[in-house]
Amino acid sequence: MTGPAAVPESEPAVPAPSLLQRGDIRALLFGLFVAGAGQTFSFAVLPALGRRLGLSSFDTSLIITMAAIVFMFGGPVWGRISDTFGRRRVILFGGACYGLTTALFAVFSIAGLEGWLDAGTTLVFLIIGRMLYALLSGGMFPASFAYIADNTSREARGRGMALGSAAFGLGAVIGPALAAAIAPLGLVAPFFLFAALAAIATTVNWMWVKAPERDARGALPSFRFSRRFLPLMLCGVLLFSTQGSLQQATGFYIQDLLRVLPDDSVKLTGFIITAASAAAVMMQIVIVQRLQWPPKRLIATGAFITASGAALFVVADAYWVMLVAGALMGAGFGLGDPGFTAGMSLLVGPGRQGVIAGLGGMTRGMAFMVGPLVAGLTFEALGPRAPYIFSTASLVAALALVLLIRVPRPEDQVT
Image (cartoon, one colour):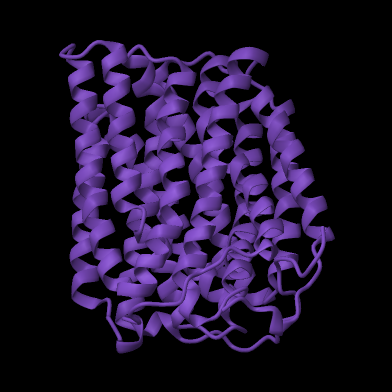
């Protein structure tokens, strides 16, 4: 690997800005919180919903994979739009569409459960619904993190991104718990709940998120992808694909190894995802803020801890072992996620934060395309432990790669 690579290592440590004292940042973080809750509850519900609809584990993974493809290609486009037309407009549009498309997914699910559509047709409509969600709401994520980047210094970027990741992760903690609590009302009830929460979050952002003059930059010179982005993006794919694999495979893993019914697995899966998310949030709110580590160290340490959790899943023979493994993986993600986001942000100047956040989103989309798909295929072909063996190998590769990445100089920043 040649040329300056992806992760600035020696940013001077300075106190983090008092972002939480600002109403617009609190509103933005609330929107990310709702988005996190809305994403993780679906991973807890979809395995049971899929089997109730007569879908295989591969069919269910295909719903997530197709949406990830749309996210992958749409992220940089939305980031560029937010660089040109402003973060606020993209955040509001994405939030509103998040609520609408989540409700639409629920309607399609009801049609399948009531027998108005056969299993194959239901699968097609669910894939379309999830792709619409990814297409129309996908700008919310790069625009939100670009907004945070606009309001933090280079030195505090990692801690600022950790706040955004923590807000999303805290929602991820609450989401599965809420899904488990409301599941007795029906497997589609959580979709309507989070559609309503999305509407509330969009209203709050409309009231508080600002559109400063510098946020409406007008036309920018054309942006050229730099090969200096590739090492960090590959690390991101390896890291985040294991997160997607965990969220996709765990529901089926519990059903088959512990021999529980699909509906009962919603609660057990929700607890594991909640444990992982809680560990990630704790790392981002407490550990990242205190350690003030540079991005490279965050990613390397996070990959090592996550690999330990994935390896523990491979040998798990009891539910409490799965809980510990999930918490370990979550703790690793809590370090690796803000390290990746901050590393990407520091590669470019202020006028490119939207598009680089979009490239980060594209990396996550690629990972969530690969992770659930491989999890579904290996689960069906090789058995329930296979997805976690794949995840462990991917994380070891990510750790080796990030240790080989050369630290770029400040003047290598892409503008």
